[in-house]
Length: 426
Image (tube, rainbow, N blue to C red; front, side):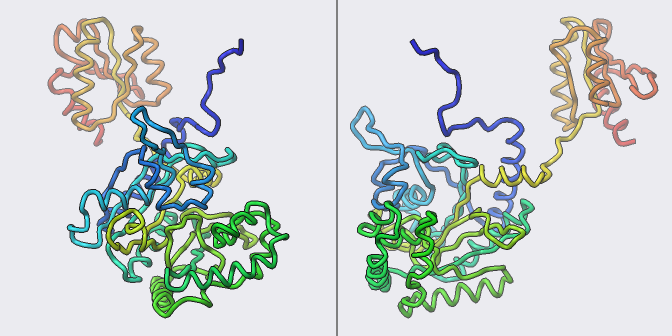
C-alpha cells in the first residue's frame, strides 16, 4: 500500500504570508488605477458552463484542446473551471442586461483561474489574474486607455524597461482573405513546422504565428503580414490606435506576428513585454486586445469591447527577483503584558479599545510569565509596556513602563488610551 504523501497537487501552490505582501501591492496598484478610470469590480463564478469557453476561446486553441479542467456535474451539465476572465465577464454582461446601462461599461476583476498545463517556473495550474474590460464602445480611444492603464500598473510596480508590442489582426471582413494567403504560404513550408503547427494549419492557421517552438520561428519570419491585408475600416482603426499611443508618449513597437492565443480577438492586439539589458524580450507581462464579436459568439447582440489581463504569479516572481519594496507593516510602539486570569479577560477588552483608536499594539496573550512577556517586548523594540496584573485589574489602573528609562507610572484604566496617544505624539 502506497504511503499517503501530504502535499499540494502538481501545479498547485500555497500563497504563503511572504508572498501575500506582493499580492497586496499588486491589488493596491490595480484598484488605484481602476478607481481613477471609473472601473467597477466584478466577480464571476469559478465554475462556468463549458460552452462559454468553447464558443468564446475557440475549439482549435490550446486552452480548449489541452488545458481546461472540465467535468460533468451530478445533474449532467458539462462545466469547466474558468481558464480565463473575458468570456465569463461578457456572459455576465449579456445575462444581466448590462447593455441597458450607460455605455461603455467598465469592469475589472481579480481572482484564481485554472489551466491544466505543464507546471514550470512561474507557471501554475491554479494561478491568479487581474483584468480590465470595457464593453459597448468601438472607438480607438478605448484601446488606448486599456493599454495606458496596463502600462501604468507595471510602472507603479517598479517595472522600468517595458515595451508595448502591438498589431492588428483585422476582422471578419479582411481576415478570411489573409487566412487564405497565410495558409498557402504555410502549406509550402509544412515540413519545417512542428507537429502542433502542422495540425493547426488545418484548423486555425493564425495560431501558427503564436507558436513559440524554435523550428517554427524561421517559417514565421518569412510569413505574410496581416497589416498588409487589412480592410479600410481596420486600417483606419489601427492608425488611430497608434496615434493615441504616440499622443500618450508610450513606448511601442509594431509586431506583425502578434496574434494572441484566443479566437475572440479582432483588430487591436497587444502585449507589454519586459526588455532585457541586451535588448531582447523577457516575455509578456500583460496582454489583451479588442474582441468586438465575442458577445455575438455567446448569443448576445453586437457589443464592441476591449480588455487586458495579467498573470499575478509571474509579476510577483519578477518583483521578488528585483527586490521590489512592499508596504511596511506599521510596527507597534506599545506592548500589552497581562498577568492572571482576571487581567487576561479585561486585557482583551483593553486591546480592542486600542484597535478602535487605531493605535497599533503588540501582545502575548499566550504567555503567563511577566519576564517572558517583557522579553518579547524587548525583542520587538517597543518603547512602552502596559503591565496589567491582578492588582491593576481589581483597582482599574494600568502600570506603564518606559522601556528606555525603566521608569513606571500608574494610569487610570479609562484614561490609558488617551494618555498613550499623547505619549506617542511626543
